[in-house]
Length: 49
Image: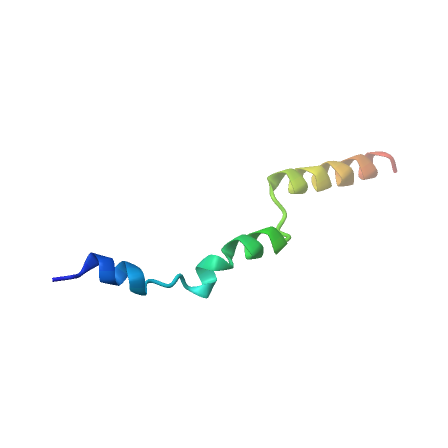
């Protein structure tokens, strides 16, 4: 049978889990608003020519 208290004491989060927040905030991926804003800028630029 598993000793829950012992398993909890041995638990150590993996480095990946503890570093996820930093990786997410440092990731510079465009979201849909960035894509739409870029498309509008390109569209307006082409109309002014």
